[in-house]
Amino acid sequence: MNTVFIVPTGIGCKIGGHAGDATPSFKLIASVSNIAITHPNVVNASDINEMPDNAWYVEGSILDRFLEGKFCLNKPKSNKILLVVNPPIEESTINGINAARYTIGCEIKVVELKTHLTMIGKISKEKAFGDVFGINELIKQVSTYDFDCLAIHSRINVEKDTILNYLRNGGVNPWGGIEAIASRYIADKINKPVAHAPIENEDPDIYTFSEIVNPRMAAEVISRCYLHCVLKGLHKAPRISNKGLHVSDIDVLVSPWECFGRPHIACLENNVTILGVKENTTSITSKLNENIAYWVDNYIEAAGWLKCFDIGVERYYVSDYYIDENQNKGIMGIR
Image (tube, rainbow, N blue to C red):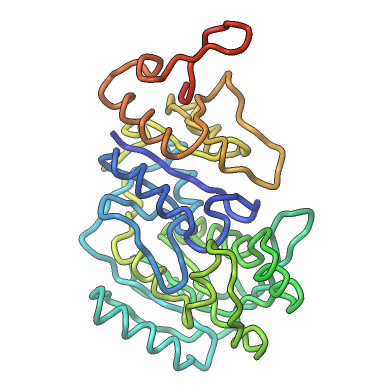
């Protein structure tokens, strides 16, 4: 069975809205899948990436178009990674590159951008977004190189008060929204896997931040470079192809219940079953509904539902019956 696991970026998802904190849930779903496709921000956790071996690391723009049936995907043995940075390249970036070379075995070429890439992260109405400048110049410059995947390592400018409020009080991740916007735009133009890793904020109050944070954010405050997760993901990221895995090979899309967008529409149009998880709440109001999607309460139930789906056991028969105060019978747990 082949699954797609999504947690949309920048909408305050309870699970997966921070720093790789959806990884355990994704690993559970992957354990009952032959191929488990997800996008970078599900498993990116700064210097940590614990995605399982059967994971396919697919950037959001490419994932949407794949689900729409516009091309196939092939997973290579390895990729040539082009890493672009604003000049001058920083020592932490060099150390991050060498760490990946000597632990993962990545082939990485580094290029300094001729035009600075400037990224500004913002939050409005519980949704992350932002502005990016120099992106078209980046696309033009990288077009002259031979590579399979593009990694970008650059600073994201976010107001200090916004960062400190997020680290101390939670809420919507202020960096993820603009990362998704930039990577989607670039991937759409170059048709190759793209992922962005931020460089540490220069403000000493942020750089030396050492307070205990929400566990879902911990990977951010213990990391120094933030690059390793991206290089590990891109090392074997699937490439666009005219043959290989097709949307018709996908069985189920697993999604938070409180979101509906392009990937869901693509699945409906291509007869891919949608399974919504209700515990993974968001900050938006666009929701799936029971006419177009099945639902479960949590990811543990989702794994059981998928296993039933895979072996052809009707889901109703594996749930426990209950009788409410009015003596009405029902089915507890999974639908």
